[in-house]
Image (tube, rainbow, N blue to C red; front, side):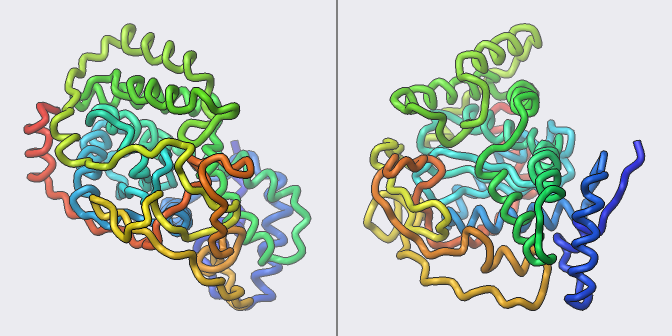
Length: 379
């Protein structure tokens, strides 16, 4: 199948330094040609740029737990799983978001985010490995890119955009919203489930870990009238559980390790009921983390005051990086509206977040990883 390449992705993701008039012309031409695209391929550089910018938006929205020990632990679990994936060589980055919400997000080219609320709800390391593996499969199999092709580029082609700046804003925010809304196909979600438990079993973890966490999650959501937060777009829970059980049985998945003691010794967060999660109005960013009024939680989570109003983005410069730092639909200051479910909000998606979006630097050596696996009887 012939690939019709457009200048759209390069100009959006890398922010070419050509004059504004030329950028307008190129982007308008790209929007027209996008209607004819039968297969839209992105280079590794474009995927890396997109993943970085989407991760920035997610981190700005929820903040990052500033605890190196927690980040190293989650990274070690993640790296144990990525070694068994189809893309072990990606520059994998594991980020713990500073919010009580239970959620996880995958962004292109190796970015995996999980909330401290999700960590608080887990009982052992096999459950953490199962959730991380699900997101790892989304990245490794490029489900994130496929979702953007289907949900963003087709819409962009039909969008009547008056000038290139509007198109850039549309694409950047659509990419971010796809991540928050888990905009994957049913087939991609099923593959992430079944491939994910295969990965953790190969790593030595009990493949039932993901199903165990889903059971806890189902109990948490039993009173909800709509799907919420993590896996909100997935098939019905019982159908997923049945499929996981069948996969484990037919695939003879032999992993056995739960690694509960190490998990409990490292992760000290306590789960917050949905009804007690403070939420913020849709379209806001930055945002006090957690339901506590204290400045620090027990493992480095922070609280913060609402961001001051953002300055309007300057008109010069057309790269996606220019947009996500100040423009788009997520640039309003925080508007706290109360506890979970207030005004129809999803407490797992619209929860408050911490005020520090900085990535926590983590160094994991081959020796660190080998020692970690040996201590957990992993492979």
